[in-house]
Image 1: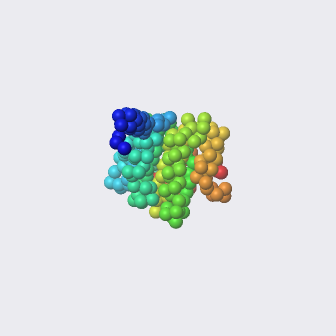
Image 2: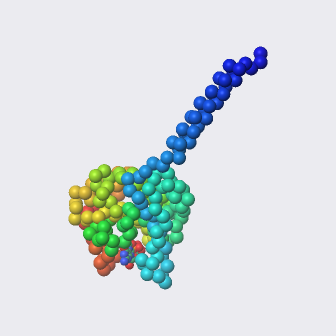
Image 3: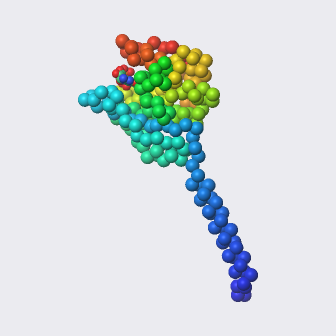
Length: 213
Ligand code: MGP
């Protein structure tokens, strides 16, 4: 039987409906999901001919989930960076250095990794740390979080979350416990909190620990 005018109208209206659905989906897909904060990603490359601060470069800012993944997927994973390199993720306006006013009285929850953990753990732990930051995983204490740093070192890599008030024991400990839980580190794996002022003024290889969990 040949196609009637009614069949044609039904087909056209079905196509129009599909088109509208596609257009709606396209619009939904193009809407970016905003983050609570704008974040700056920094890179540090150890060039001995320059000062420490001159080796630090801001790569980019982002403020949406989609832009975060776009940047993350584009970058070299942490474990493939050269020895002496760092990535830092800090809230926009806070520089990843002890001297920044937001960091001056703060400190860091530090995860010291063994050499073998570069291959087995580092990338997972750094991604989880990034997701904790951009997802504001520390609840009301997220305001005390300044940023995080991953450092590739020959003696063992380091991962840290930087907070703004080292003397705010309650908030610092809550952040440390949530961080350790999110990283799914075994209970006996030590996380230590160091005040930046102690790290900056240390004389030997060890910095005294203000808190540990
Ligand atoms: P580092 O890169 O944090 O650790 O600090 P690394 O390389 O493991 O060395 P270690 O001393 O912890 O064993 C190395 C050096 O970089 C410090 O001794 C400082 O000279 C310099 N540096 C690091 N940070 C984070 C800062 C900073 O925030 N400000 C300034 N001015 N120098 C810093």
